[in-house]
Amino acid sequence: MVQIPKILRANPGLRPAVNLFITFFRSRRKPAFGLNLIAFGLGLAVSAQAQVSPGAAEPRYPRPLGLGPRLGPSYPVFFPPAPPPLGTLPEIADPGGLRPVPPAELAPFAYEAFYAPLSACLASPDPRDWLTDRQKQQVEAYRASKAALQAELLARLYTLREVDASSRLQDLQSFAREQTPRLVELEKRAEQLRLDLIGRGTGESGIGPVIHDKFIMTAEEMKAAVFYGRGLSPAQRRLLREMVLETPDGAPVKTPPGPDGGWLFFTPDTARVQLPPGLPAELAAKVSAYERTKNALKIELRAAISESGGSGSTDARVQELAVRQEPQFVGLESLAEDIRRRLQGLIADPLRAPRLPLLPPELEERIAAYRKAKLDLQKALLARVQGITGQAPAADSAAMQEKVQQAIALFTRENAPRYAGLEKAKEEIRRDLAHVAAASPSGAGNDQSSDRLLRNFTDSLQQHELWRLYYEYRIAVFEPGLSPEQRRLLFANAIERLALPPPSGASQPR
Image 1: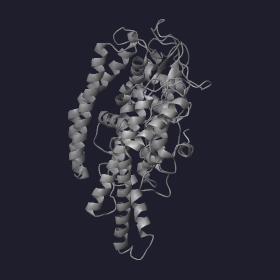
Image 2: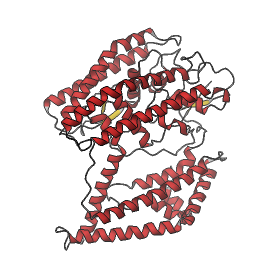
Image 3: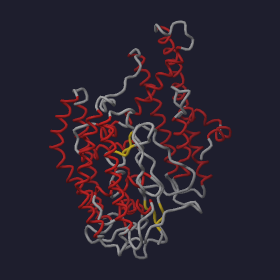
Image 4: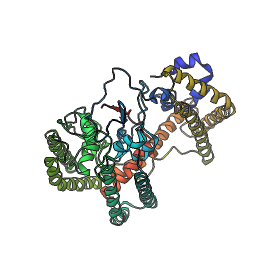
């Protein structure tokens, strides 16, 4: 892990850049998220290289299909990042070891079942394994179609944000009937892309792990089965991905919902939420029924995959289970929709932002301008760091980290006037917030009122930022009236917006 204090002692010139990442509106009870950002920025060099630390425990997959001798000793296969629980601060990449990083082109496909097969094509060093022109066109056409449908759905939701719940439900149900057939076709295209990329859709050879010649029992093997397993339905693939997130060995966990009972896996699959405590008895019973049904599906699926084995051809047992479970998946979605409707009034409106403390409009505008200027400078600094780490690999991590530190020092000198301007704006805003606090009836004569207002504003601002960060995620999970396909479309957009640090690639053994 990058040791920021140690770096600052050795490089005092970096302090303005580091300070930029530490949020001005501090909470005394919460660590500054900006500190993690600078740690991430300084640690990008360590996580960006394509060598695996000796002795690191790497998942081992069966030999890939159709590779022949041309791919050298190994090549990386990447799996998508795990969606975080709703409303939590996304994790920062762990820069503790030198591991492969996925191609940037994978970012829009983090919720797709063809993510891993596509990664293998993009990461292969051999041009003969790259996407064909036809496949490039198909991937780009899919991405464009999905983006257009996401924009269409978000635009409809925006127009309904101030509409009462009953009218909004009717409008969304009507729009779902109109849009869902196109989403069904889009999901069929995604499955065909997956098949094509692993070499089954057109008879071409694919690259990536193929599940065969052994029982699938571990979470790592189930992770590979999400993308390469044969005979699974799309619904089973999503459920299997959730099982991988659930526990190290993929076994279902039976925990009650709510803040005291842990996170509830809800729909869309892999979304995790906490329900309010003290649910009405009827609603609590439906939540329990939802969990029991989903866990039963997981147990059946795990057993079928574990017992499949065989030669690598489509497994009849798994395929038969897919047909038998399909009505249960439909019933599970129906039960989830019933739960959503009963939660209305017990949870905050997913489409409406939390209120910030009441401040003069001019002061709010200055705060917004300050935050934008600071964010722009953060982005510019991270872009400079990424420009260094994206170059040819250094001989070792220490050399790369030295280059990163030099780049940050140069950036700090070049942008000294901007740093000074931000510092001046910060002090002026702090002074004016103190005046607002002193002028309020509860603040007069209280020396701590300014700090209290700052703390309250900080907490509210953090809630507001998390609300913005998880906007699509929250709607996908809790807004009644959407179809399951629309929820997956929104959730995919939410995962992309979160910009989660992806897991390192696994070196594919020969």
